[in-house]
Image 1 (cartoon, rainbow over the protein chains, first blue to last red):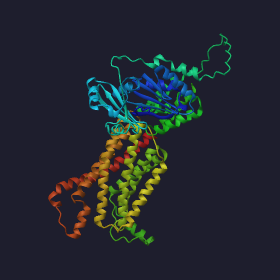
Image 2 (cartoon, helix red, strand yellow; image 1 turned 90 degrees about the vertical axis):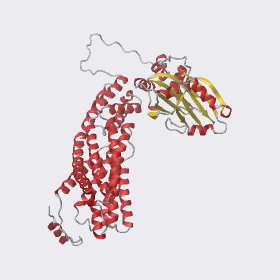
Image 3 (cartoon, rainbow over the protein chains, first blue to last red; image 1 turned 90 degrees about the horizontal axis):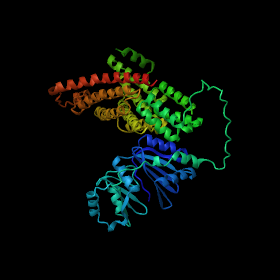
Image 4 (spheres, helix red, strand yellow; image 1 turned 30 degrees about the horizontal axis):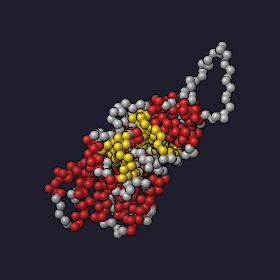
Length: 319
Length: 264
């Protein structure tokens, strides 16, 4: 059973149809996320592990197989484009739990599918402590699963398939361990691996996404004839904004008009519509404005909210 | 202000109204207090209709507070003891609603989620009031002891919910201190500090049976009281009760007028 912990939800069950993967990952990077981004597809699951905005591990579970890192990102792009439905969630986790999750995703298997009743738990815990392991112990049956997280030999949290967030007591995980046929995996981080690469720097997700989403049957657009050189630039033309620039501009405006919470509100609502690129569609722009307005009513005056909406509309027109 | 002649004229026009035997003298302070609650109720009700869903709970709560407070101006309220019980219950429900709204506000500042609908709040409030009226009507006509218990319940619920509200308002302020309405949130917190002192002093007088209602009761039963031995404490609690009653109503009107300016 594929089980990843849930921490503080930053986005939950966002339909993938609303998501522009490169923009979403860019936001997680810029937001310096420490935690997990989880993709739930009908026939596969994917987890991306972030440490302060750095994409440190990627894993895809598909048809009983585990695909990791660059290959996992390639598989994720394909699934995003091919799957008819699926959801996307982002959870912030503490640094300690994130390191334990890194062990779960990419660590060495110290115990692999061992039956619980054959494990000397006291000795195992002693080993985790003395070797100062950063590890995750997964206890599972066919139906249920639980996780125990360790950082430098100390227990830092518990999670199970019925939990909404990281727990501080082992109660439910102990019950899973007591189920008939329960097994355990222990994955530990190799302490010699001090330096972890940013996967986002190794794989150009945006070009992967754009290349994969191109229609291979589309008729190529003929190159436009070059404009006569003598034609001067239009002085009245507005400066055009890219989707990323528009994203940042909207967030800046929300901060300016509504304060710190306005920034978070704008980030959340932009995440919900997928990306600022979607604002070319007037319906999406209207949706964004009305959701921002709904929250802004608790933060600012009607006049300021109107000014903010006008400013966002003006910026969106520059896309 | 002597309104005896006015109410006597009213009873002659509407003969079904109970006769007025005692002089109806309404204190200017009471009138001022009720006026302040009226200002707060009008603005908060306006918020509840024209603003975010979360303001609905707070707005309806403050409107019910005005309703419970305005009852003291009714010269017949001594005649209808059931009505007095209903008004104390409505006063208690009102702080529950306000606290519900404040807790939802706090939740919003943490999750930026707004769920539920205004209709649900209106229907749930009407249902709660209807159930309270039904329960009070099904029971025997409240005696002076029972009415005093209702008043005590009101004071206790207010005291503890005020503490919670101050805590949540402080947390809300920490989350949105750079937003344009942050100062309005501080003012709302100040209202609850005043209300806490007002209601806690009332609760204190009730707990030690030094309140006016108890003194009125024992006047007929002949029971003894230790009020004279503790007159210093009693006077102090009574002065706190009176002063902070006025301060609460004044600050609530001021706060809502200020919030109106900030949110317009």
